[in-house]
Length: 396
Image 1 (tube, rainbow, N blue to C red):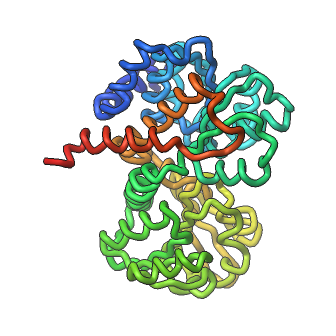
Image 2 (cartoon, rainbow, N blue to C red; image 1 turned 180 degrees about the vertical axis):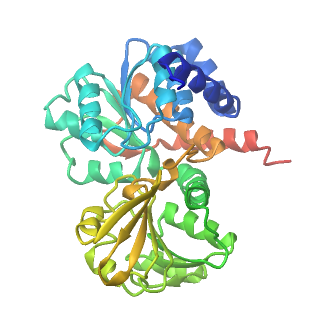
């Protein structure tokens, strides 16, 4: 039997990161700038974000700028070889791929215990932890990657975060480049990779017509899928209808759809009333940040049997002889399964450049920013758009 050591894992992670790094020219230029300017000298960045190869390139870029890094991933998406590689690079990193949810919460607590003065958050877990511990003193600011985290900052945490948090997902540049096109592509790729099922001719229901839902719906249709959209916002539902999609309620479409993909960022999208009506053999999947859009607990509580069929596939037998297929236990499907790839390299080069320059703004000019959640500064958005157009050779 071959035993994989930490050294083996680190070497494998380093090789994967080498490829990713070579295809991220925007971060490469910024890494050179940071190495000269050292904007993060004297700062410790606490991070909670998916630990995969593209994130490793981001962390290398911040480290080149003088940052000390303490980090953990998100539940179910951590890649062990990347953790080993980052540890070998001198970063304090917590987490494993097979961590339970309780262990994941322990990893977040460990980052909070280490202390930091700048946060790089995903889902506002670190911000919420700081507030819960009354430990916001000394934190000068940070960034939040997701819409879900932005909603928490403006909802349950509103008025309780005394430092600026730049919400990367508020950027129109990120919405177009990463959410619509990269998430759309990666969700469809992940569905095909995990299930090995055909897209053309299959009936898909996409819950949510925000930027991610738009992308998923359009990419499915481009590959020949028949697509319906569920959207409670009248204006977005109107847009989906004019874009040529069938529009309806989730329970009305329960018997029509063969695959249901949630992309809303909100809890309780597929719940017990839906499970009572869903068609036999339907596939249920989620691409939102939190694993709460599909009520997995209610689904399994009402099951007659649950059988794991593959790494990210479960068969859930229901009363009356029906069954559904659940992907990734309701977690983000585009970072699940064997050899998950996530969003495209180009989109994350763009997205992580937004992160890098926003964190630089916090490190060097936090006093010019208002406390609480706020969008990416317009000058950063426009500068990155110019750089991205040049990198794409869009004028050729």
